[in-house]
Length: 117
Image: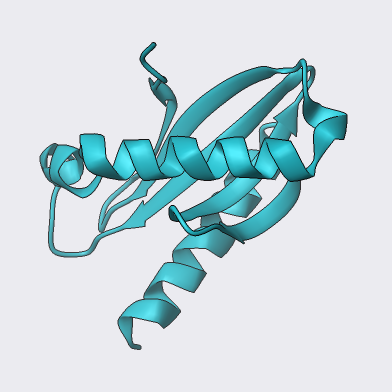
């Protein structure tokens, strides 16, 4: 399977996990000029922007290299774009999660990063 197929499969697995946890997925693969967000979900009155990392070769410790500050900034800017288009979600609490799908475990990092002002 190529890398896009692996990524798609990882997103599907992450979606299942988040839905089992009570979240409702409202969008997938949101794109803007700034970047892409894999999943957007609702958890009560919180809108959650989720980055999914599917790595078979790297351990959990390598996650910081996959989601560095530059990547975080692109996700945040894309989230702002999403909220500007979908104004019905304005006023909700915003959260940025990461779902790491590794060779031995799946880890959901709640509030993995936040926007700095």
